[in-house]
Length: 414
Image (tube, rainbow, N blue to C red; front, side, top):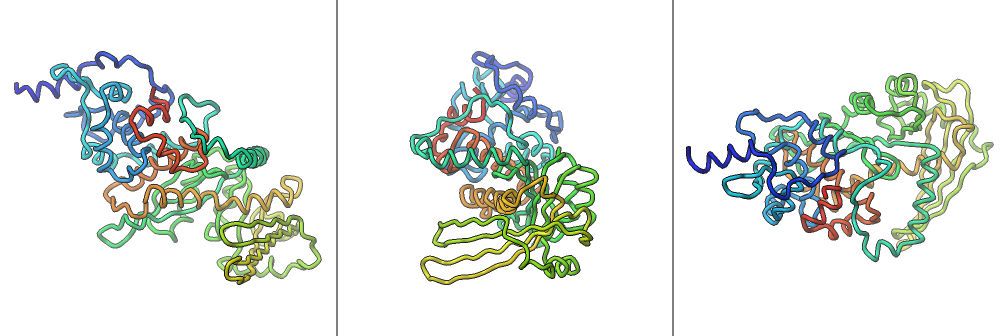
């Protein structure tokens, strides 16, 4: 038997060698090892969990936004790093084997994207091993961190998730369609799950599929007007025991006319907020009123939100009015709670913005199989790990974890 063939057989059959006895983050590895392996058992060399862990750590480093960078990252990993990644031991060469970029690319293209999302995403754990080392500039934002903690306490009192879709503009298939993902995230930006849909206007038909596995008992679900669909929101309240805040536009013409015609002048403003930043000043007021006979399942209150925005540089001013209905009563949520929940719908959009801006997801041209969805899941998992480590800005966290050892420590693989 040729030496190279013998080396491959040894890599598959021999247990990890010297230095490979370190215990890794058990919870993470258990989830990765439970992934269904799409490969044929014949000819496997690298464990599936090992390949996914390598991709996760490689995409953590600043500048690693493409699969070609994964091959460069693993070539710089030392033998101790490969041992912690559970790479196979080659008894003939006397070293741990490192996969090439093509091996990881093929696996990500063939993986079940929903299974990968369940393994890497989800609610924040109560405790976490490892973690990063926030830089001095991160530790210096004391006032902002205090404000974030106050917002987190408010979220704990009334748990909420946001639903929104995202098109990967660079992932254009041969027929001209683009990869479109429908996701759900905690208010605060942590992605919980996502799935691929055909095109944006088909998002509503995948609403129950996305939220079906989630525990939404007592949670508030927010979304844009596209998802204000009677059957879906009736299912949300009756089957999932959740609440909703539904933006109402002209895709629900009768409901929109009914809410708009309410005597809003007689309703006092329940909440008013003012903010300055990004070259503009904004004032938002919210009015909410209990209304009987709203033409929508489980709707209890009607909401009117008025936004005044002034461009501080050009001096231009604009006014926008948005209407909504909610299954929440005033006993469940105050006007200030409703204003916060509506405002924090943007948190999932902020998550999408980070993936585009920091990981250049919109420029990624990977389009075969489940590759685009798998890569989006890996990027979301990296963002969650960096936020859990205490970073306010994702680029800063990526720059702090450029070496294999630092990335392993961030994800608990040490």
